[in-house]
Image (tube, rainbow, N blue to C red):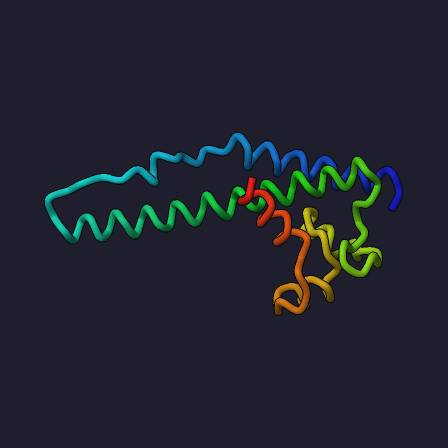
Length: 127
């Protein structure tokens, strides 16, 4: 991968990181509210659960974007973390924060191997 392509991916990732880190999402959505109506409480609980899932998804994406930026810095960006083959440019265009080639990502989705992202998440939760 040449320097121009690397700079393009870095710019894409930095823009995504800024969007996720300083996003307009609000943690007020997960605030527990009490209401006298039981149906309203059920609806609020459902909305709160959805907000929590969205925050979790965004946090995971931000972690993946930061990891991709770290791989750019250490020179391993664009190489699959599992098989160490080069990740196709088309895949990097679609998912610039990806750590795996499409074949290894499919295997990870089927839980055929323990992904580094899963290990990172376990270690982050333990800390």
